[in-house]
Amino acid sequence: MTANALPGVKSVECEITGTCQLSCTHCCTGSSPQTPSGAMTAEHWSEVIADIAELGIPMVQFIGGEPTLSPNLPAFIDQALDAGLGVEVYSNLTHVRASLWNSLNRKGVCLATSYYSDDTQQHEQITRSRGSLQRTRANIREAVRLGIPMRAGIVEVIDGQRVDQAAADLRQLGVKRIQIDRARKVGRAADQSKTEPSTGELCGHCFRHRVSVSPDGDVSGCILSRFMIAGNVREQRLAEILHSDRWAELAATVPEPSAGGCPPDDSSDCNPANTTACNPKYSFVPAPLPSGATRELV
Image (cartoon, rainbow, N blue to C red; front, side, top):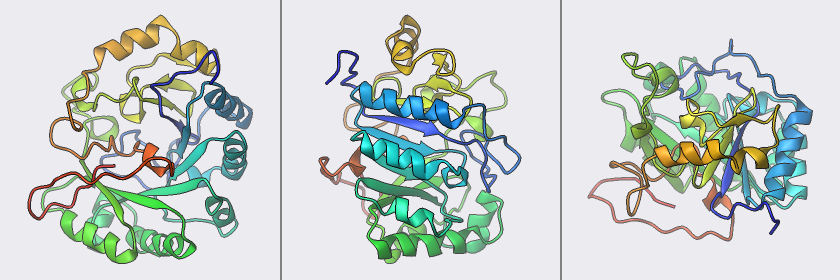
């Protein structure tokens, strides 16, 4: 482990593009087809990946926006794996170009996706995109067929949402790791009566165990805490930001995680940032659940 190592931080979310094919009603980053890809260049991201490895952080998550829209994703995966990092790609899986499956199927890479309902109309109401459920289901099938480790997060967004049925549908498709979380009031789902989201929307693991880098290079504790910026990797190296007084000050304002999981009643997933269990050295530990519940802790 290097002198700059941060033993508490387990993963970094790299938002390699702000653009997404979907415009989900609850999106924590406000991504959409009209959202720019961001100011970060491929060279900037390459430097960030190198810094993550140098800091001794074991995992990197490529997210967006929609990371599969970035033409640089295969190169980023290659660099991360070559540096000894575990990799998760968090994708909506509405479109995966054929050549990308080779990168996703490499040892050390796992996939994650969001899923909302087994009902087409309800799923599309949330994603605001026709055909999104069918496309995502088809690519989940392909990932399972290829044996790519994967998980799915279900976010409860609307009243009457078929969450239990969505979980059952995922299990039928072959997905065994399923987390359920509530929609957090950040990004597009932010409480418009407040000038900025509350730290009460955070699970307590950001800044302590997780780091996020936005498409413009802003560094925060996770994609849900983008309103708490510690610095920018286009101006400073990641290590300098994470060892700064500003980082420590922001971390101190985030409530500590509650014992046994995230507050108040969710899945300890910090959805969609739960990356550590994709590393084979971590074991899966199921938590006791109320009768009929489908949540899993990892």
